[in-house]
Length: 193
Image (cartoon, rainbow, N blue to C red; front, side, top):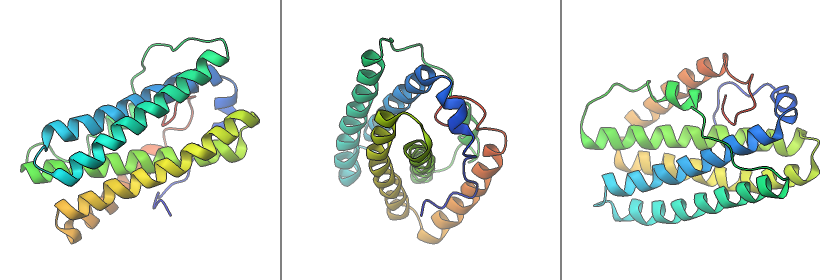
C-alpha cells in the first residue's frame, strides 16, 4: 500500500530492542521535524489556503506525537537526548536538483515528506508487530494509522499542485532512489537509519 520498493529487514527490530532509549529519542525528534516541515510549508506557500489549513492541523498533531513520545521517555526514567543527524533524510533530499520554479520546489518538498511519512509508517508497522514490548507495540500500532494518512495527504497535494503525470514519474524515481538508500540503512536504532 505504501509503494515502498524495499521493505525494512525485520532484524532492524532486534537492533531497536537493544536500545529503546535511543529509538524513542530519535523518534521524538522525527515528530518535531515533521511539525517543522509543516510550518515551513505554511511559511513558504501562504497563498495555498488548503495546504495552510492542513499543515496547521498536521503541525499540531505532530507536536502531539512528540509529546506522547516524550512522555514514554519520561515514564521509563529517561530524559530526551540530543538531536541526531538523520542520514536517511539528508541523503534522500539530495535527489531532486536544486533550483527550478516555486511550484516545482513545492512538489519536491511534498514528495520528500510523503516518502518520509511512508517509511515511518512502515517502520511503525514493523515495531507494532515485532517488538517484544507490549506497551510500545500498541503505541506504534496507533501511530501507524496517522502516518499512513500523512503520506497520502502529501502525495495528494503534490499531485494537486504539479502536473499529475510528471509528479507520478518523479514519485516513482524517488521511490527507486530511496530503495537504493535503504540497502545501506537499517543497521542503527534510529527511525529511518
